[in-house]
Image 1 (cartoon, rainbow, N blue to C red):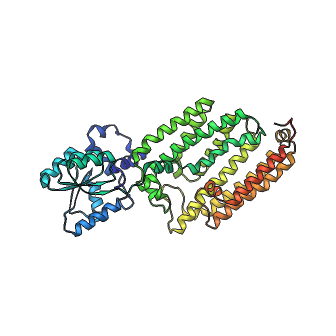
Image 2: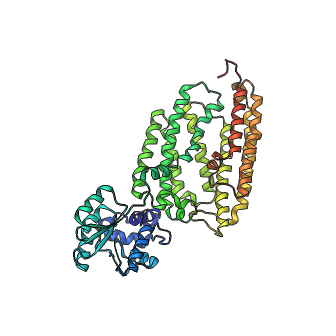
Length: 462
């Protein structure tokens, strides 16, 4: 496997609150008992797990040469038997049995007793395997660390090295989803609407808020990927994500997520907005773990997360949001959240599937979701118009009448997103789609020019 089946099983085990009762007792009974419980209560989809295909090809070739293949694993016997039934590759299975944990020295002793010391070739990938290689006649190394590679070479003959896992740093950066950080640019929006382009302190604090949101969002994306492994592997594009594909060990995510979240909160504390980062993190984690499974609750939660970015920018820059603009943001982001869900359902329908994994919708819900989303689009345009004609806007701009151009621009942009969704062009995230769409960039540039012209060059303004 390119994944740790115990860690993956534990993630699935902990995701179900019914397993929390008496949870503290299982580790006390030993790792073998814990593995047995996890295998029984959180079974893995063996058809979707990321296998080491280069290794499997090698083993099939060795089997063709007449060599006997034994699956010797520290995983629970139930899981090991399932893998063997799926691969149809091994002549024998030796595994943990709920009482004895077959790892490291215990596995080495078992294999030496079963086949004789020095009479078997062991295929491994981690430091505990070093105790087994000491008893083996030769070794096959699969994506092992360089230092371990050198140690194994000193104690036994290395028959084959397989090294096909991509470098971890690029995989880790990919797991952070930096392209999604475009959403965090919303923190600068209150400065623009307040016509405070010359306020350097506001820009600096908003930049800190932007970084805090990026760190917190990256932590949440990692948690989302760790809790959605099976669903991602069943998706034609998401299966390439670092954790789902096995390019990045799950333990990296388990360590990185809390560190990134702590970084986001620390940055929030520096500018007095830690409570917003904390609220964003709680809502995001709740969405990743459970709320995404609840119809309508999911899209309203997504809209809230977008709006929190704008609100956080207002708190950081100390430019309060108009109630009209806040209402506009809510309807705009509800529309975008619905676009995201409709695009996923349309993709589901194209693949002849009715119900997505960990979603509360069916393909037949597309029509009602489209109606809700398009309705939110037009309501957002109406509220934006009310915001533009308000006294607060008139007081901040030299030529506030020019801002009316923003209304049809915003409406055009959202309607175009819906048209693209209906035609099947939409990326499953509308923000990512817009970032790659030249019409969206042109619309945004036009809106920025309108803001500048409306601001005017009167020195009293700003």
